[in-house]
Length: 177
Image (cartoon, rainbow, N blue to C red; front, side, top):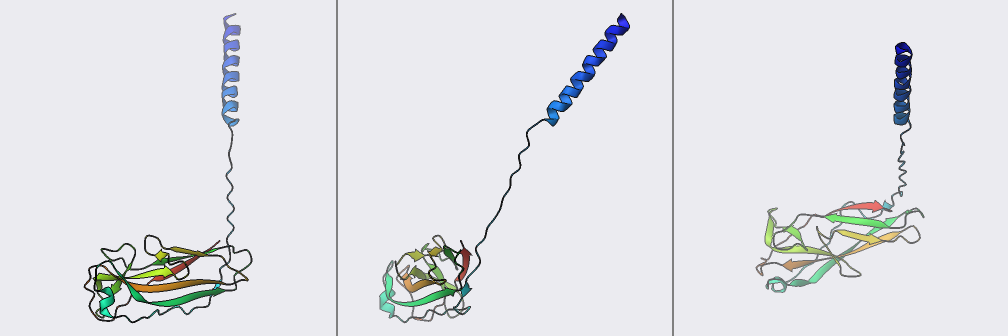
């Protein structure tokens, strides 16, 4: 009887272990599938370097906090955009300048970023300022083409911008959607 009892207990123990293994094996499985569809790039028709130049009198930026009336414009034209591309983001980045979060640092003829003024870049159609903190300009292509219309002008930070030639390198990258 003792032997039969032990055999019966062993059978229950083995059945219990098999059930536990089966319970573990029956756990749910999740498969996450990610399919990324990308838009093909357009062809940038503009040269790799675009110069926006303008001339202004020092009196235009002699007062702190004012923008120059003088400005320069340029277009970045893209072509060959596939019909599946519904929008294009241009992201602008350039040197920062202390005292003006809406402008880019401007370098004097010695290559030093000055803190008396900045160069501001804007959407030429809407005048929306493009800066290192608000740096995306989006267009919708039409007929396989798109154009980013830009305007640049000087901003006086301190009111003491000196006469001279100032430059600002701004890099543009594109994202196609």
